[in-house]
Image 1 (spheres, one colour):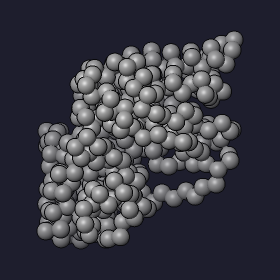
Image 2: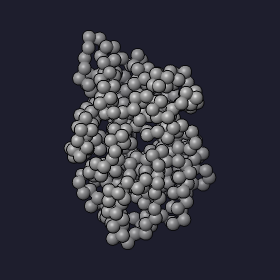
Image 3: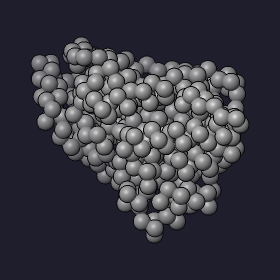
Image 4: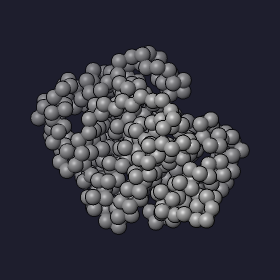
Length: 384
């Protein structure tokens, strides 16, 4: 470990079957006015909505709802939530859904009492939040983003999709994690979430050049994810597999495995920009560009990529370069087994979008190879 760091994460987790039983005790700590945030309505079909509302009614809470939060929540939708939260003097935001719903809830929490345009101040300019922040709690129904135990909030406005990391006040106060809530998720969404988890780990693992405890933790998480993902696609209600995936997702992006390391996040920059232009599912924008991106980075970090092949995929060839390349080939085969999208054309990317996407992706000097528009264009073409 070479870098100095501090680590703080106050989110309380309730994990396992019937974890919802802890919701009542948590909500007793907050006021009467609850903003219930959820997505397209699947929680009404599977009964989670009714279960949550029954608890809120038992506590005599006033329930105000924001439904229809989309997979890539927009700033217009964010403003709708902020206005309702302000009008109803909301005391607490309860997010029931996947990462987009939780990202949205944290956005509302920070932006409701913003003085001025929150998009400009908090997303474009990354100004410090100087207003009151509403507390947030989460009930997770789709795994992948890790938003349930961090302060991130990804919001889209026109062709810009920006992930803002808010300050420590924005950690969810609690998160309820019941793997059974993920059983009814369509396979497409499940595997997209699985690759989002893998991508989060790789952004922190495929960086730096020193012997780091954080990397050993990352390797264990990746091995667990690979093993459990293959079980889950064959047996969607395999509790052990789904619970392992859920737990891995949470630890993949709660600031633990990036501690003491430089981090990349350029792969996410490409995926998020594609998502802004196409509204495609986030995990699939990552899978469609991942192999081209990592092949671009590999020549500048042979040792780390060879370590990835050896310690995660159990592959070792005669040379480090051969080992590194074999590791990416093993990842490709795993991705194909999951049924991930492997080409950006399938996501609605058109050739007339390529130049704009390439010019919009940001570079990170901490990466092995910082991006330029020309490099991004080559990655997009190789991902076509």
